[in-house]
Length: 387
Image (cartoon, rainbow, N blue to C red; front, top):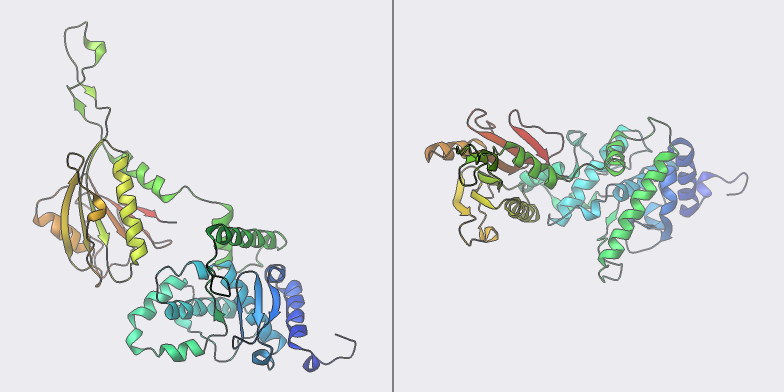
């Protein structure tokens, strides 16, 4: 840009560079993240896109955007990178997930006054402070009243599948993990040059999760189960110190034994991948115990296919058929246990913590809620959050 040049005379590339410089001065986190995305002009997308390494932009599509609007666009792409939206889709509907992530990002940008909102972009005040997963669930519940094609047309970028290259060939797992690590390093480096308060709270939570990793939830679950299992006395192995007295005192059992009930929330908001993760963890629970009995069922608004598994039988828990797909009633689990006079030492529920009505009976048995939702604790029992 030469002296005396009007902003209107700048090329789109020059405007994007100006937007980057502006962010470096006024929005240091975004300004320091921006260089990781190489500016690359293309004609295959209406406005722009990112693959985590490049910022693809269509000069024709962005030609009428102001510097402030380009800051909004630039920061929008950077947040997709930071939140790894392209890796969090799982088996969700692609169009609906893309819409949800744009709603989430635009709400953050508007609330923090980052650039000027691009007219017509996806924004709804009700999605303030909601994660993309929560927004997706709301959209899915109301999908019959939505015009998906119209909402897609309101997106200000094209969302790429980052598990693949631009030519459609798959990336190796090593390439994917390398990209994730590069993104995390860029986030940490950008935070280090910022003063306190210069990072949106959503990014602050993300940074905390990167820099302060917690104990794996699987390990926490195992520890919680063991802490609730009471060791029993047995005469099977007398205490050797009592031999000389001729009186045999019982000794503590050396093998933990569990007798528990497990319910899997199979309501419509739980993905197949998450259900499979639940089953894997349930299988992992039993490997830590030599003697065990588990009564397993799935539920939505009622209990389905309760089945008993034990260490005495050659049974494969992975063969359990999960049924559900409707609403969510936690109370149906307690109703079932009471109806068959079942009193487990521990009742474990794998769930997204969204009951319609009561949370259940707090006085019936020890309860562990294994939660897929962040910062939601059950009003009783113990809540373990899946990372």
